[in-house]
Image 1 (cartoon, helix red, strand yellow):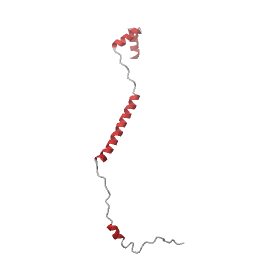
Image 2: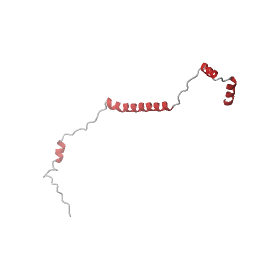
Image 3: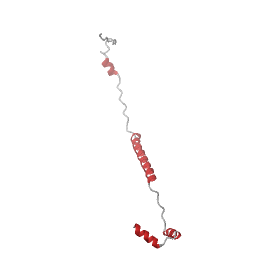
Image 4: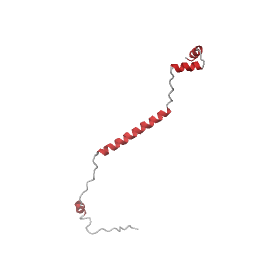
Length: 99
């Protein structure tokens, strides 16, 4: 079996093809210019992602940090020890055992 080419070109089609292609006005590819928006858009995306990372990191770290212990004044501490009837001897013994 031999293959037969069923496509037929008109007489002299390829003879004038070069001239016809040359007569078609060439279109220059539109090159997008550098605009303020084109430069600013990636910078804003980078800044937004960085801000999001800082915000999420702060939220995570603030929830995992130990809660702050309330500060006791000397007067509050003395009042507590008096209410609990803690003697100086007990305080000294505790201090010697732990420090």
